[in-house]
Length: 401
Ligand code: ACO
Image (tube, rainbow, N blue to C red; front, side):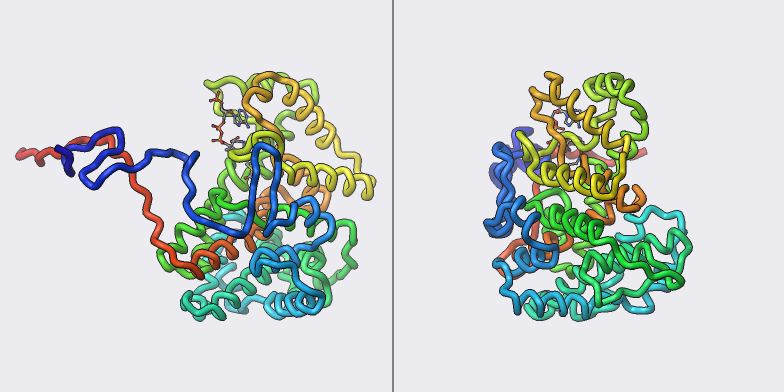
């Protein structure tokens, strides 16, 4: 007889049968109309539009609009959306006091997590998740304020004065302005860098039910407010198996140091007793190639070429890719470079320090997180509550002595 003290290891309980699927390898957690991925053929579509076309023809705010609203905006709608975002780029002055409480050498993702979660203490209407207008304004606030917060975190770590947003600039220009300008010296933003930054944001904008988006949905399924849910997503993104990989790629390239050491590191990655993995390689869904990695590599070549940078790390990365892709271990397991393999090199060329790479990813992924959260809340949904396969003790009595 099955019951609380007798549990069948096949997943049978007194309540019936459920599937046991660690890592959700074969379980859909929701329906969604936002993003389609065909991992075998390297296809990624947002609302039906291929990522390659969006990276070439769209900009980040247009991609945000598409993800949130389902269609590309007409010129007037785009202008209105851009100006609404600009209206919300500033954060509450009190938030600076909160920021001041962190150690300056704290990891930017730790600070980002706290600051974004704290936004719900400033915007109380975000707590009313059943009001569509309140949901929309929370989405706008998040997209508008993420670059401001990311730049604040950077300036704080440097001990430099915080820069206010300049709403004359485009989204990505403004981000670079807040990052690299100082009140004493305001320089024009290089359009090549602004375009590369924008493309990085577009390439990260959404990726259906990845670990961080699933975390946002799971947190949201309890009725939690959008800032709290996105803070949960930021926490999930931080791990090196997910968004933390772009930072880890650069550190790995540093560690490899020279083309002559590649074979040693490839051998480490293949050794099952060694925890080392080739960072920036492999993907849960893409088993052929990551379409974002292709665009990222083109952008990388373009940016370094236009800036006249001859980065030995790029050469090392290309050699590593070449050697790994001709190694049977990587070929048999369908391990290809993912989007993070090249993004670090571009970010480095822009002048962004490695500790901030995952913060950039979080800024780019924000429209995806909030679009999924909104899609869930706008439709009938249930609290997310997975079951488990209990493998512990059966019922036993507390010892008398
Ligand atoms: N280096 C060496 N071996 C690897 C790597 C790697 N980067 N990735 C996977 N493998 C091996 C595994 O050891 C496993 O081998 P086995 O079958 O002999 O046991 C096989 O390939 C399958 O790998 P899994 O870990 O089962 O694949 P999973 O889908 O669970 O993990 C993941 C995907 C987490 C991305 C993994 O490939 C990885 O850790 N890559 C490095 C980190 C990284 O780049 N993450 C960024 C992901 S993309 C993003 O977040 C935008």
